[in-house]
Image (tube, rainbow, N blue to C red; front, side):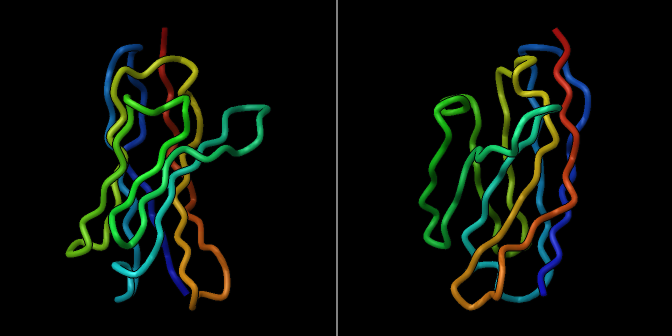
Amino acid sequence: QVQLVESGGGLVQAGGSLRLSCAASGSNFRLYTMGWYRQAPGKQREWVATITNGDITNYAASVKGRFTISRDNAKNTMYLQMNSLGPEDTAVYYCNCQWTYLTRVYWGQGTQVTVSS
């Protein structure tokens, strides 16, 4: 079982920046593919970015060039640096992890990001 805990959300003005963190339990973090998702009010959860265990990254078109996903395996932590935030980025942000030998995808509890215009 993997526990994921997000932090770093908050209220920021449009054009500002935030860095989210996702801390994972256990000793296999370096093997996981990690991802960020978000869910805005009244909308479905959408994929934001992914980083593999080989540090290959992918981004949704809506955040590419503004957000940067990274990981620190020594700290069992993944990050999402978010720049040039706009009101459309307001959502609860969730992290997840996947690995061939995990029986399911694990999710964190989410952290709220609110961008005021």
